[in-house]
Length: 223
Image 1: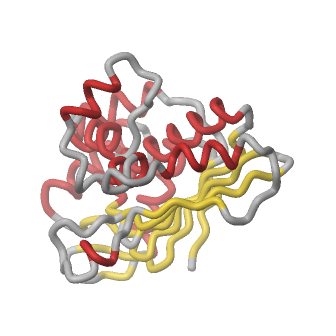
Image 2: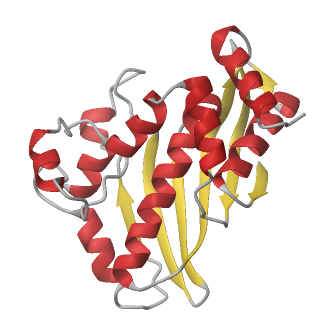
């Protein structure tokens, strides 16, 4: 297990890429670290990083994460988005409306508003009934989220079975942090730390994705 203590989302992405490129074990087409832990403690949005990432990788991964991992219910037109979206297979559908039966997000907000140091606030994305027999296609990468309110603020831990840090890491980081900020604003808390635990943290080792990763590091003046 390797723990990366990071500041911003940008720092988390850079540290993850450099660590995996340097120390990751080579598998078929990837460099991998098992049980990679990434901690983020500064939640300011970095417009410079966002601009460069979109220029190199495009908008797809960021917009996908913002549309399928977290959608701010306070945004104008949210009801229309909710009715029109095909959410049966997304993270947000399972967090916000588990098969039309339960809103995990509202329950989390209710518990956080108690302002107690609880140990039992969590949300699930992985569903063994629908996902247990899947091999690749449709298997969610994000398995669950854990929330620990403490005197210094809210700690969030996101458990991923797999994180492809090069093209998807930024979107994953950004969406979970945005979810944390939303919950804290709703519950009158401060966000202290967001931790990502990846059963398999990896990057590609060749091809267009690897070239784009190197290109982005160069744009960011990272050696």
